Length: 180
Image (cartoon, one colour):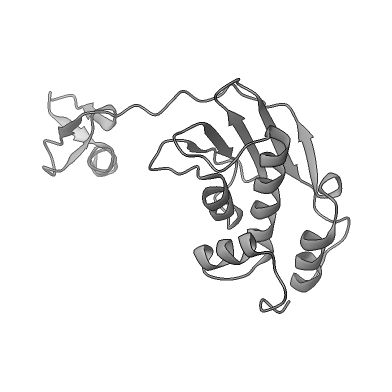
């Protein structure tokens, strides 16, 4: 599909953020817009929205860009389930919605898929339901601790005691386990 076509401005900005036009970015763009409409929400400013994404595919970039939910702010949570499913919560009242992408009933070309994602109605593209998990807690700023093996600092909750009493970060602990 010609990415120079007459795309909505918010989609053009998402594509620029992501780096290229693809069906995956369209899934996230549509999901983010639908979540905002269903929750009567605007782009997050101070962790008032929380997004739980069940994949780490292209669409997550649209979720970050449009909803303002990011790993850095702690209001983007990744669940490694491999599903095109997105749950968005509004902190002010706890309301949330889970959106699950419905693929076409047949294999589509990249162009057909993009056209479908641009033209189909929301209820054709997504199953809308209640969240399957409670709203994640607000992000907590953790102190850092030093790994006794590599000397690097890591979040205190990611430094673990070894049998000999030393403290190790996750990569060092895993390397020690593999070497034994």
